[in-house]
Length: 203
Image (tube, rainbow, N blue to C red):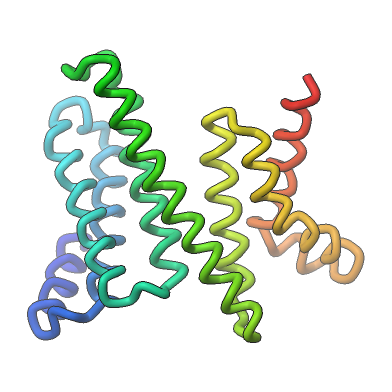
């Protein structure tokens, strides 16, 4: 099924090479394929293959930004892809043949790519909100993803700054519409993570 989706999007790109949406979808299918391979625990048997799939997914998403640079959802997904690469190198730190200094520089570089993509997504969605577009769900997802990434780095102050952008939405929803609160897993998770980060600073 995944390979069929890959072929479908590749065909669309072959017909229209500048189709940013097709590049976006192809990148996401490759990310799904990477997740599938990892779920099968094949990453230990064929790490090179999984790494190649992940890098290819990032390349497709970056190509998509060439044609649709103002797509906030695309930037969010690119951030997720870069974060996955960051975690890949972190998890294989002991097996990596690079020196400690080189690996540290690589992780810093990837970390910068993650931050740039998530920040860009938040910026785009903020502008869309200002002109009246309904992008709340995508905006909240980007804030949660970025805040979660920063918290994993123990940058709790940075995470608080990002998560605070949507925490007020959760509090307002509690006061006005309890059903909406229960339906918004993203807002709830962001609020819980914000509380966790604040407790870590207070320790």
